[in-house]
Amino acid sequence: MLNKEQIIQWLEAVATVLEENKDYLTELDAAIGDADHGINMNRGFQKVLTQLPTVTNKDIGSIFKTVSMTLISTVGGASGPLYGTLFLRASAVVTGKSELTSEDMAKVFAAAVEGVVQRGKANLGDKTMLDALSPAANTFTEAVANGSSFLESLKQAVDAAESGMKNTIPMLAKKGRASYLGDRSIGHQDPGATSIYLILKTLLYHVRLNTYK
Image 1: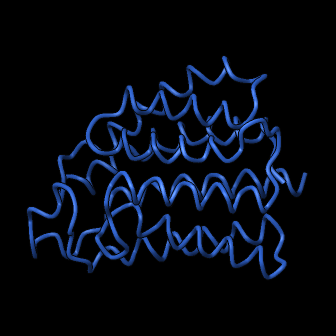
Image 2: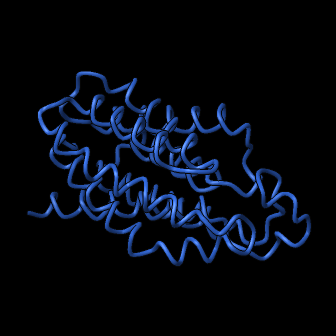
């Protein structure tokens, strides 16, 4: 179970984690992109941080929608529309909710994947954020279906996201600026998959923290 206070704490922590990893993400993007992924994601979530106090008494759907609108309006490049769509689709399946069950979270994951696929027109193996997000979503849903707890399901999902992120290294990029490099894109970890992993890893940390309080 995940309540709205924990959602806000997680988003606040994501802003910190992305700020701490800004240079790392930008370094990854410098190899195969525009060298701005870390800068853009940090800018977007720092702005999200300023908006969170305005939604503390709102439902989780409204919180996610505010994150979406903020990212779309402040994050440059492809990341703004993609992450904005991710949170917008997530918001639609949890409208009015003040806490999320495992089943709700599975719906959030599925909606997020669907949104990213439709917006980015990417497939698994294209060397994008989807290569971390889709395995995480599928793993979470399977774990829940097999009777695992919210925490255990999320742990398995984060492990899947990490594997998916690392699996982008030998891939040939087929989308975005990285695709222009052809074979030179091989051997580099995708920055979008990396930021997905960092965001989910941060969520796991907060769920684990609250579970064992």
